Image 1 (cartoon, one colour):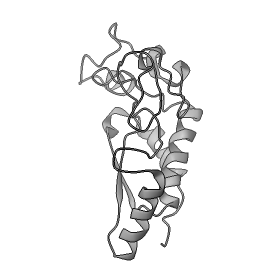
Image 2 (spheres, rainbow, N blue to C red; image 1 turned 90 degrees about the vertical axis):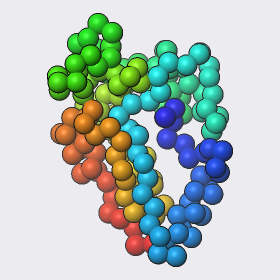
Image 3 (cartoon, rainbow, N blue to C red; image 1 turned 60 degrees about the vertical axis):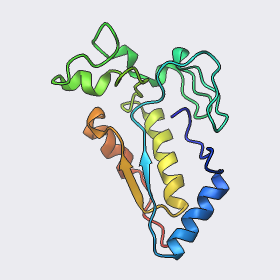
Image 4 (spheres, rainbow, N blue to C red; image 1 turned 120 degrees about the vertical axis):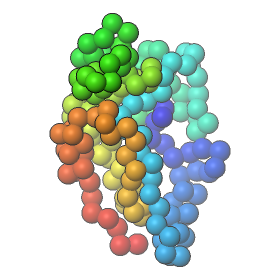
Length: 156
C-alpha cells in the first residue's frame, strides 16, 4: 500500500462504506485483506497511486498516512541488502524487507497507532473482520498490541 485511504478504480470511501452497509443488510459479511506489515517497494520519485496518494518509496515517504524513514525497520535489519536473506532466521523475517517492500516498524508506538486507527475505522464502518497479510513477518507481541486496541465489532 501507499496509504490507508479507501479510493481505487473500484470506487471511493463512500462507495466502500455503502457496499459494507448493503452487504450487512443482506447478511453478507465483509472481511478486509489488511496489508500492514509493509508499504510499497521502490517506485520512481513522486509516483502516485490509483487513489492519488503520492509517495516516494526510495525515500520512504508516504504522506497519505503519513509515514517517513523513522517508521521503517532499516536500522534493525541485520542484512547488508536490507532484504530477508534467510527465511530460517526469525529476526530477518520480522525485521527486514520482504522482497524489497518497505518494512514497517511495528515495534514503534506511532506505527501501531496508525495501523490500529485504520483497522478501527474499518470496524466502525461495519466490516466483520480481517485477513491479516504477512503475519509471520510481524512480531506476535506487536500484533497483540494492535489487536488489543481494536474496537468491538459493530452490530450493523
